[in-house]
Length: 95
Image (cartoon, rainbow, N blue to C red; front, side):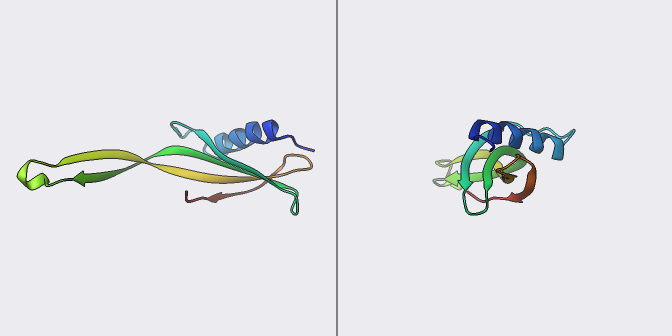
């Protein structure tokens, strides 16, 4: 039976293999859950994307506003089989 720490470690390794050669800045564990019914670990990993969102507060035309730019995050749900930790799938996740 795969333990939760090993599920986290393997999920990060699978993500690195899938995106080999690509930079995924600020990778963080976002969620982890064990589904007893399906015997599957569900691990969500978030990372910064290249996309940026811009938010404006106040009245920018009159000079009393402020604009904030922020990188958007991507979230990937990695599913691992509980019995042996083998890869069972990866999906986009919205948080």
